[in-house]
Length: 179
Ligand code: IMP
Image 1 (tube, protein in one colour):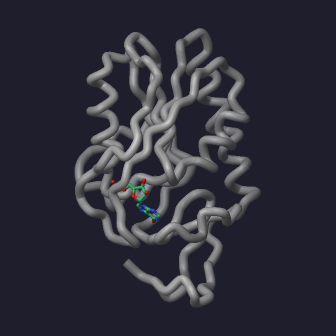
Image 2 (cartoon, rainbow, N blue to C red):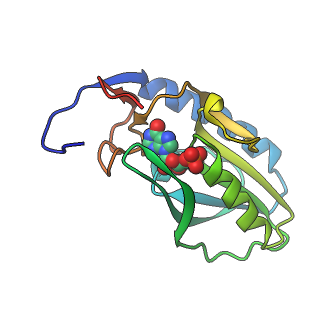
């Protein structure tokens, strides 16, 4: 993709709809984690905006840490996941919630669940902003999701294409750009 060109992004999920949904999901998480020892592990880079909005709507005590992984170049999944920077939080005996931007094949989320379970947490659940259910390669554990969508490549609200478009307050499809 040439960053010098101007691309038209077609709106898929507008800002208002996103904020309403996040409030609903956060309320559910707050109820489910009442009196638990919640540690949120947000997956960078894509989930930085989603996680920031989600945690500000939570009404429970939680620790927040980050893991940075890479599995995509442009719009292509590499099919394998690399940890670029790991979390520091002690997870043994804690209730871990993995916060991810989008589940496509499910390879990344599956990898993270396996990695985190090695730290012997009390429980592991996942919260994803977008779920491309039809693109999952294997069964993948999604406990909370804001929106289900088709197999389109989307940008905005933290999601990028080669590092661009993350700052859009809504989610959209790049016009004329197909997988
Ligand atoms: P998976 O391992 O195939 O499920 O891919 C997960 C990761 O791929 C996400 O965390 C994103 O970084 C990236 N990804 C997958 N689909 C999209 C998309 O439509 N737009 C932007 N990034 C995507």
